[in-house]
Amino acid sequence: MKKIQIDNLYFEEFIGYEQIQKAVRLMGLDISVQYAGKNPVFIGVLNGCFMFMADLMKCIEIPCELSFVKLASYDGTAQGDMIHELLGVGIDLANRHVIIIEDVIDSGNSLKHTLEALEKHNVASVGVCALLMKPDCLQYEFDNIIQVGFEIEKEFVVGYGLDYNRQYRNLPDIYKNVPISH
Image (cartoon, rainbow, N blue to C red; front, side, top):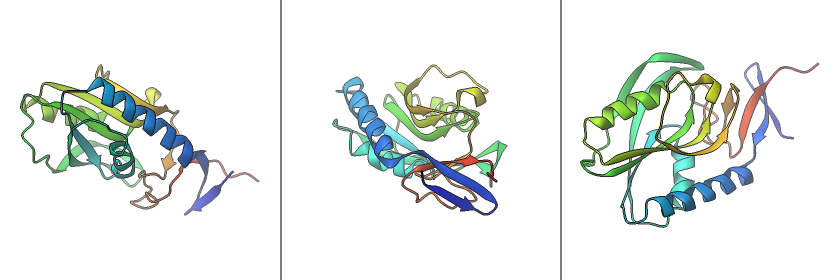
């Protein structure tokens, strides 16, 4: 099992790249069937979604559009309550079927903010597709989560788009923080 050290933290491989790709392919096929004939707009929440969304879009077999929003809710490793929208969508979303692409749904603060912002655009529907979800951390209930690659515990994870102090997003696998073993 691969292990890495980042500052004073230790991580071990949690979800390997091949396992991620298998889940992404299945999600892409399912979304393609579910949204056939609807020309959905995929909205990726940056920065964390970039690897996931790039791989997912390769598996989408229907006409679609894509765009991004950038939200800030983390300061290093501590999750903040304030959400700052930094970059908007740039597409007219009225009467469109929108699929939000998230790297991880943790507390749900970012997702709640994104959903509230989309309500102002009179969308036809909103679905959420997330690579990871931490059910025990959710502070809100969502009835529009259509795909989740992996449900995980409260692990602190890095890699495959997920960062630690804006670094390590480039790792192809997902690593979880582990206690130091003696």
